[in-house]
Amino acid sequence: MTTAVFTSAPAGDVRTSSKLSLLAKRFIHALAESRARDALRELHRHEALLEDLGRRQDHSRLFLMQDDGLPVKI
Image (cartoon, rainbow, N blue to C red; front, side, top):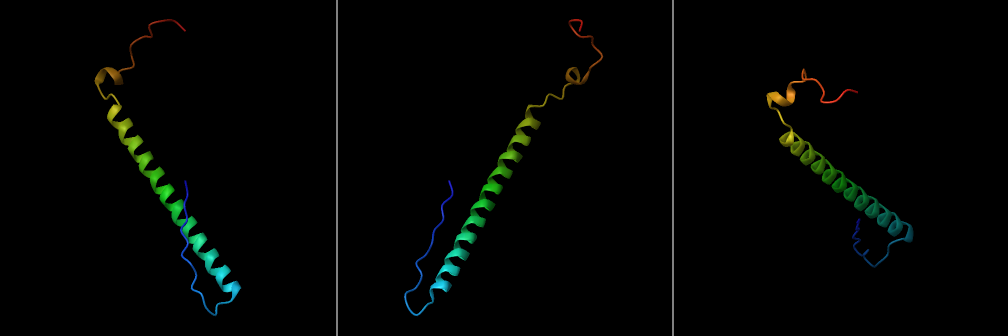
């Protein structure tokens, strides 16, 4: 879930277009931060998966020998 937090604009002599521009800039910044966090989370999940696969890999000589015949004919 993506959540954006906007601070309230200061009341005073500020033009409407400036408020809209500031709001758009904050929204885009929050969106970019959210996407960067999601990408980092996916990267960590991918690295953890690769480490897990590396640990599960059987490196014994029996696993690497492939000159035995198949148990059934194809």
